[in-house]
Length: 188
Ligand code: ADP
Image 1 (cartoon, rainbow, N blue to C red):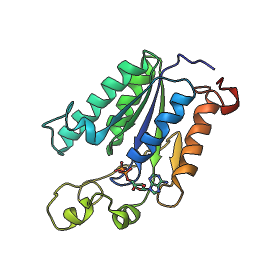
Image 2 (tube, protein in one colour):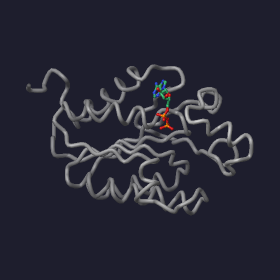
Image 3 (cartoon, rainbow, N blue to C red):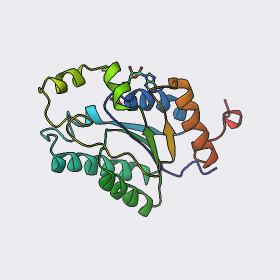
């Protein structure tokens, strides 16, 4: 166990796949295990750090590079960073991975692998209905691509599994990598 080893849990997946939900639920678990945690949520980042950016490929890549830049700064100072942005393009995700790993932190890509059908049926924010009505051109999964990761550290079938099942799999992975103590090891 290396409690000062910084790491980034990088959620990727379609809108509505469950990235924010899992990120928000994972954060307190990591805190209970003694880690300092920061969450960089895509929707929140777009209202400050990336305010003004749109959804062209160039702007999406800029958004992800910014999140990656901040995540890396935090992780290399021992923080457990959780990011929750669609991050649809494989190349820029891999670029962020190289940045983080190159600075000595651990990059844990978690694929929130709900299908388009599952996300659209859920349509938590009503965005798919708007995209289908042509009100949101360039919407990921509808008329903009989503490139699934080829070798993610963890896959969560968020359209079929419960939040608890998904969290348990992520926590087990982090434990197996020695990034957090197993629950029994946690001192009260
Ligand atoms: P995203 O951040 O990927 O856009 P959200 O987290 O905002 O997605 O929305 C996901 C929705 O799916 C939430 O309403 C959440 O309660 C629900 N949900 C159901 N099962 C899961 C699961 N296994 N993991 C994450 N979210 C789930």
